[in-house]
Length: 81
Image (cartoon, rainbow, N blue to C red; front, side, top):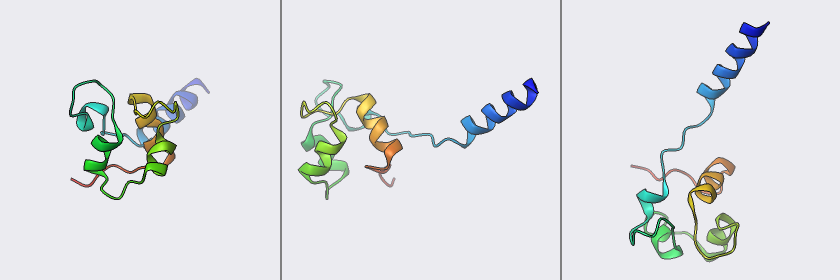
């Protein structure tokens, strides 16, 4: 039974989407946060309303946790390479 649980957990972890986009990929001013202007470079069609949905703290900046949550929730997608 324990093997089954461990196997199921491992399968879930492997199947979970791995998001490669990080704040450092978007942050151009080195403050470890993403502004609307910085995010708009990767997402030219980004609206202020969509940015506000990602910025759950309401501080007009996106941190690593907010970015990850937005990717996981499908609010934004990984940019095409």
